[in-house]
Each structure stands twice: as structure tokens, then as C-alpha cells.
Image (cartoon, rainbow, N blue to C red; front, side):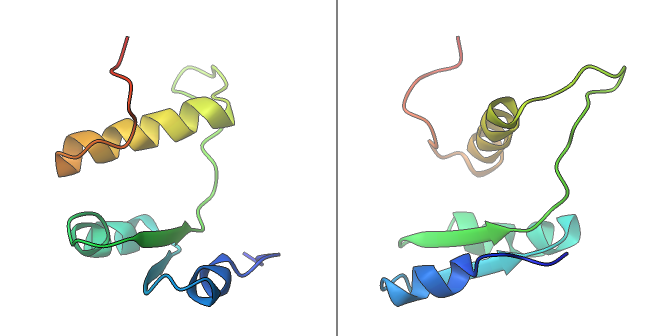
Length: 87
């Protein structure tokens, strides 16, 4: 997969020291605790294929994908990603 922007380099250029680049689900699993649970500002570039459909063929838009991922991080790490509770 070819990236158009080097987001990791941009993050480092503005002074973020904890920058991660992940290009597989296995990579995310192996680095998850270090990315999410260690203190400090963190920037993570996730280069993954977008999930386009739920089982059964119902499309998932980008906003829904963002919130599903954020809620997964909240549950898995026991931290708040979003300020508002699930309705």
C-alpha cells in the first residue's frame, strides 16, 4: 500500500516523540499496550484496508468505523477516547 502523506514524519516534526506506524492487525495487537497504556502524547498511523461492509452486506461509513474503533480502544484499554457516553 503506497501512502501519499508521511503522517509519522509530520508528527515527529511537531515534537511528538511517541510515534507508531502499524500496517497490520498483528502489528496493532503486538504494540497495543505500548501505544495505548504508556503515558504521554502518542500519534499512531494505522495503514489498514477499510472495512466496507458489516456481515450481511450493510455498508459501514467512515464515521461509524471511527466510533467503533474508538469504543473498542475504550473497552480494551479502560480509557476514555470520546467525551460522550454511548447513547
